[in-house]
Length: 215
Length: 267
Image 1 (cartoon, each protein chain N blue to C red):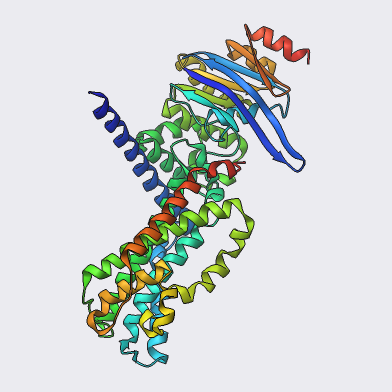
Image 2: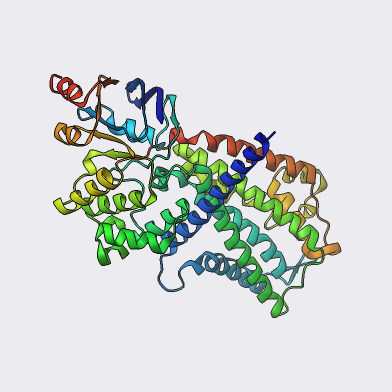
């Protein structure tokens, strides 16, 4: 179970503060797949970073009773000047994974070939996404945090992600933030909407999508 | 009753995680800074060696062999190694959190780990450089072995803690204030007279000495020199004062570091 309790996030701007998230409360259970919809700038990525522990909320807290992945999104998680392999080594060390078998899986899943030995900053966004997905899948988190913008790979890669995440790991919880209604409808079993810095849970994905449409 | 062992076990588990993370950060730091080309990570020792050996050779060549009855080469080495350690720790601490922001994506990596890893690396590099330069100087008979190893190690231990304290403070404050970030270099330069690296407190008139001994670094260097030269010098230091001043700095540094996440903007 993962629970967000009264999360408030404010950013300092030149004219005072702007409240991006206002008393966000929700919880998700094991194997629940929550899609969070919202317009650009609604605070979706901020929320997912707070859930992942990358950013601290201004007030409120996150209770994590399962292992939660880092937010799979553009940027972050990798050191650009290091090669993909060095990043992989680092992640193996901090998560206590066996390097050889992890590398074999990443090689096979991400299909980056020789580019794995080049600095991550030279990767295209699709290549970064592959590396990030391969690593987070091999770590076997109980809950995955996914920023939909990262789903940029080619059809073959998307298919593999879906096989792994939605097929082999159907028992895992998932939080996806997106503004793509189709994607949420296809992969989630519950829906929420962030609007005017408040988050509202809906009984079904379709209700959330209808509410999003009528904004 | 079973609560305590379980709590202890989980605490030990957390320490193991931190140990693993700091180890990984040290290796990562070596790779980002020195790459894998030519001697690569050996530069972490090579840089301070070049500096210390260069200064030691220069001072030995242009200054009299003894000053205030102290042999010049040993005096320069015992002064420069701790000074370099302190300066490197401080300079590497500036904006350390921001430049490592992407690592904070992984929840087990904390700002404290980032700064500890950098301090470990700098301290280890300067110590190894110091040992190598000392051994070389002794091999060519420009330096004698230390007279009192206990006092020497005590001084070095204090200096390492002082470096850690300075790094914690600089890392946190440079993240909060641009003024601190920009003024670290000039501060480190102006602080040289108060580092004790080029003077001994005994050379000063007694009525000004107390002022110099406010600096933990001076206390540390006095201990190191007392250990190196034995009875041929009169070191002045105050261990209870040094201990409490350093401990206070470390506590303040830890306090700031624990609250620093709010000030770090991660992409």
